[in-house]
Image: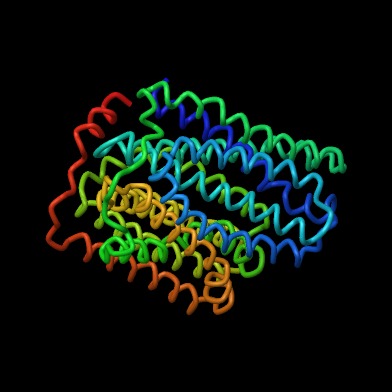
Length: 406
């Protein structure tokens, strides 16, 4: 079974579980576990902050022990933590379990990317990552559909069954992951040797910081758009669900195709910049949707906003992936991808506060400010990628042979 197929099936399992938890977790924590909404919010915030640390640390663990081992341990820990939610009845236990669950998920993301960096070279890395993102989106949607059954029943037993199903699905991912060593004689667990520290690589750190700013857009659709539609436009509330479906459809159709636009560092920088131009356009359309009193006109503007947002998301993500791979030292790929994932986690952790204090809190000026920040980050990325390139660090002959066999 090729690595792409292994990661595809593992992603189907874990992302379906993620979709289930996205849909039922809030109600499960408050109605079944008896945790107050304020405690849930605080606990998940603490867990999110911890995920930044685990994303960074897991990169070094991947270099030391191999990404396959790290993936298996993290999936086991997350499955166990999801099951432990069913026994949670107090705030302290909830925070502890949430830190394990969210931290383990963060470790898995880093290990996945570290494995891609080792298993593939050139355009294949971004292409496979784009494919896995499509699989992730579709599987989350499928998980949400499964969770709808529990939501429709609404009983304590239904919620417990949903959470336990998510735990089992997460553990199911271990089945394909355990097949990885047989593909290359254990190369999936080969420790890295030497390499430059990403913390001393100013170019990589700068690119990571800029991408962290752009990554705020990922929560704009799930946090900012619903609040804006329901509280500041004449569009019916059901529009939120339709817009989310539109985004999922566009990403599923175009994410893999977008990799054709990115073949090297300069083209990646241009993709990020063009993506942020579209994000600025999306912010303008979102803001404009708050003015018409006619529901149909408001919905039309929101559709235009989500189309621009989705295209901007696709381009900026594809370009960011290429830079994260191309500028990483192959001899220390896990540590580099750990820094990249930690930066993205920081951006997403700050996103709710940034979005609510700008776009939602200030209206038109806030949308303009947010769009301008996206554009500035994109322009900075393009300028950084347009500089004279340093000599590329070559893969070792062993890595190249393994990559081809994988």
